[in-house]
Length: 64
Image: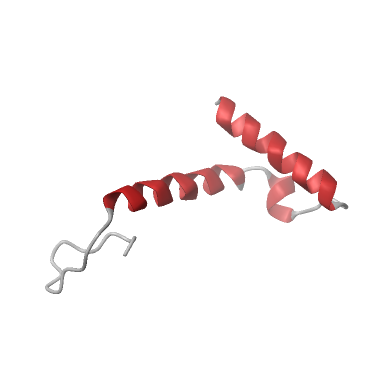
């Protein structure tokens, strides 16, 4: 189970904190990724130009 549960839940299920932290980082990255309209709308004509834009935006996000 990855998603954090309510504290008052009677039937507690196992929780992996490391996996939850990794998922949170990935979710945050995609949130930042969607700030760029061109990628969110997928308006590139070719797969190659789309991949180049993905790499460029990932580099910009990583440099912040």
